Length: 180
Ligand SMILES: CC(C)(COP(=O)(O)OP(=O)(O)OC[C@H]1O[C@@H](n2cnc3c(N)ncnc32)[C@H](O)[C@@H]1OP(=O)(O)O)[C@@H](O)C(=O)NCCC(=O)NCCS
Image 1 (spheres, rainbow, N blue to C red):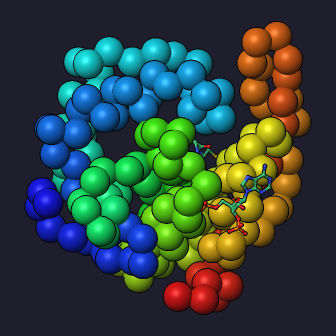
Image 2: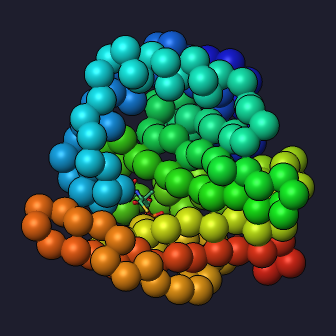
Image 3: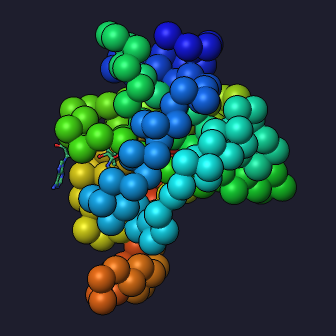
């Protein structure tokens, strides 16, 4: 285990990034199916990942980002990020990624989202947390619905991927809808 445990769930706990996470983050960022599911059009270099970790070491005014690891063996599984914090409106965006496809669909993502939503409402005192999910990612949308996110709109043709346009579904959760 490296560093503090920020919040502990049933499957995962949140912890700060460390420089030693770079290999995993680089592999995850450049994994082709993850790139499609997150609509990531660029590829990343080791230098960019190192700089990203440095930026995430301390919570900033506009973001809070954590790694999450398996409670059973401390293995790093993914990252979850609250960003675009709008202090005036108590609102922010959230995104999540599990680095290795073999870890998808095993309950890690739902647990990590629950913890980060808790962090957003309890620690950051947010009122609203929103996210975007592409129409071809029902696994992610289902995980978000289990946490309590509601579908509220569609950004039409928001992604152009390999010659085809796809819609992005906007989902959000408000603090009074949150079950804790
Ligand atoms: C999105 C992500 C974080 C979700 O985490 P996860 O651990 O895979 O999800 P969970 O196992 O917690 O929950 C997935 C749910 O979707 C369901 N599901 C899986 N495939 C599905 C499908 N094709 N259609 C509908 N539901 C599906 C699962 O059965 C489960 O629901 P259940 O508990 O009611 O059975 C993870 O899959 C991931 O990182 N994917 C790659 C990157 C990505 O898509 N990021 C999100 C971009 S918006």
